Length: 406
Image (cartoon, rainbow, N blue to C red; front, side):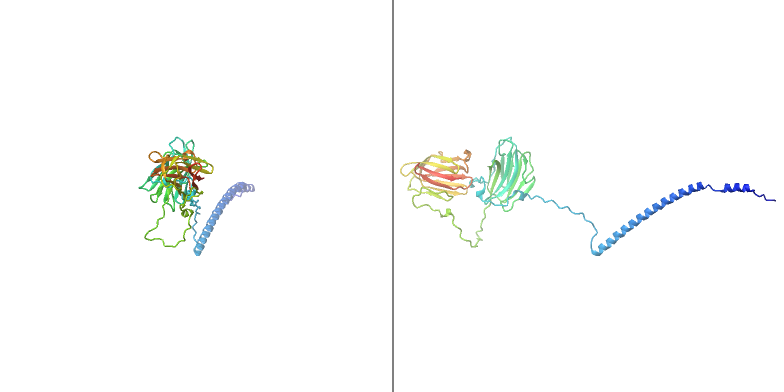
């Protein structure tokens, strides 16, 4: 069988048919290359992340080992913020300085201090504000002072001081108070050291009534009063401090220096006639030759001058018209005793009398209470503070004169 050979033309045709389309090959080859590059980038990023995590873990482990070696702790603490200083209510309202009684404005007489309920101010429709609260210690008493203001004509709110013997408390209630700016907040308590006042508390407001409760160590007298100074109005509670007592079974034997005699202790009654005295706070005498009840008091005059308050008793009688008299100043009380009296026209038929000088606008001198009995009159003057005074006989006008120096 003869084998047919392909002609040259046929072979060329076959050769052309067998050739590949290179353009198609390039297209296919290009897509695979892009996918390979994308896969490589992802692998690179993943490897990089693994390396970073591994490095971080290594550093943390290394730090832990080092801290263990040095005894340090790796725990992190959140810094604690520095607390703001808190207000101490006692420091805010209590003066640290103890003042002399004579420095107290509106100083009350010893007879005014009582154990019992007291009240000042008047009921009104005016609204009040408590501007501040202050506690000021004095030598013989503690002063609790409320500075108040008003939107009307009434300067002081109706205020009561109610004493409870069971609780040993004084409850201060002020009516028609619309605002309280005192440094002692509601439901706060200030402890008071070294005083008969143990503490003072500010209770939550009930309506328009402000309530403060003062707790005492033990029962002691007090006085509630009003005080006006330089257009400022104050409700004042003065509480008597306890006197120190010595134990009679264990007396203090510590030797002490002899006290310097005061002018008062050196004053003795003159041996002869004495009709005049100089201004002082000492005990004073008028001594005369009168022995019986030969003198009468027919009336009085008074005058409040810039520097001197004058109180003149008009004497009646013949012969020896000048009585014997003594005057003693104790605290804010001056007592004038006049003897040799047949009568005194100033008291009423019961032998009692009183003049309210403060109500008449007199400064420093509040009242005088008069008692006449057994041919002797006693005049008790209540003062705002101890004042220099003098008693003398005005022979020209036939008067017994008492003068206070403002």
